[in-house]
Structure formats: C-alpha cells, structure tokens
Image (cartoon, rainbow, N blue to C red):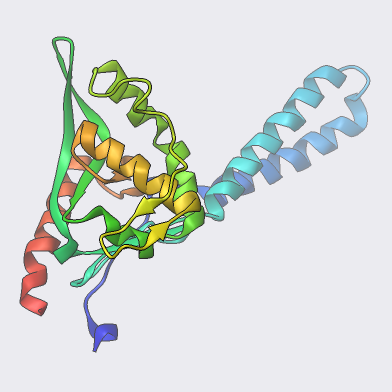
Length: 225
C-alpha cells in the first residue's frame, strides 16, 4: 500500500524559531507597555520605534509559523514540494537529472543556492503543480533569469514573461498562470539546464548533503517498483 511507503519529511531552515520570535515580540511588547505608562512623553519617538520593531519581529515569526510544517516530502514514488502558495510533485521516473548549480561568473566559480531538477518532459508539470504556486514561482525565480541574462545565456527579450497558450504533446492547450510558468520553466531550462529549482531555504541541511540525499532516494526508488 502507498500509505506504508517510507517517507522522509524535511523541515525548512526558514521555518525555524517561529514561536521563539513571536514570544520574544510579545514579551518585549509587554515590557515596553509597562515602561510606556511612566515615560511616554519623554521617550515618545524611541518608544514608537520600539513598538514598530516588535511588530516586525512578531510578523516575521508569524510568517514563519504559517509556512507548511514540511517543505519537502520524499518517498519511493517521488518528491512533493510544499509552499504556502501550494505544491508541486514529480515522480522519480519523471526526472532525468538532479544536480547542484555551479556557474562561472568572470573568473569566479559560484554555487547558486538551489538544487536543479531536469525533467524528462516539462509538460508533466501541467497537472502536477498548483496554479497559485506556479504564479508565485515565476516571481521568486526572477533572480535566476537576471543571472542568466548577466551570464549572457539569455537576452532580455527571451526573459520576458509569455502569456501565450502552452501546447502539450497531447494537443491540449494550457492557458493562464500554468502556461506562463511552463514557458518560464522552458526558458530557464534553455539557459541553466533545469526545469525545477529547490531553494536552499527549503532544506534542513547543506546543499551538497541534500543533493546527495535526493540522488540516493532516486536511485533507491527502483527497489519499490
């Protein structure tokens, strides 16, 4: 049964300390409020700044708390990436290659804070990513397009967002944010060699370790077929 398959659940580093930040903001607010009762007139500007800082800390903690509990779930069937805007999932058999992303900028070798996934066929994402997340990823991955332009892998014109319908091999046409995302992923694949990108902030360990884990899971998945 699929429910009995082993699952590795990954908690994102970016979600850490959510409750701690909210608690710190609350304690600081109570302390400031008490101080405010006696010294508001003398320190009005300072206290206002402190209140705003406490609000920022609380909102930061709340944003972390509202993120999905697990950013990634790895099982013998494939990968599920979870985001506050939705999710995407792909089977191991739909993946051609998983790799770290190293690029040369001038005389310097840089490692991008992503793990790249090269799919066998991009069109499979049409039914395996939520439209809201597709729309969100277009904006989150703009820095990758900017880098591709800087490295002269793409022209500015090629990097422009396309709202044209995306034609699937079956003859079906995809429109809306899904089509825009598929065009976007196709352009990134042309420039950088990958269709999907897992950000370092979604991982619970170093990039090298996590890439090795994904490759091991992909290799081991054949034992469950």
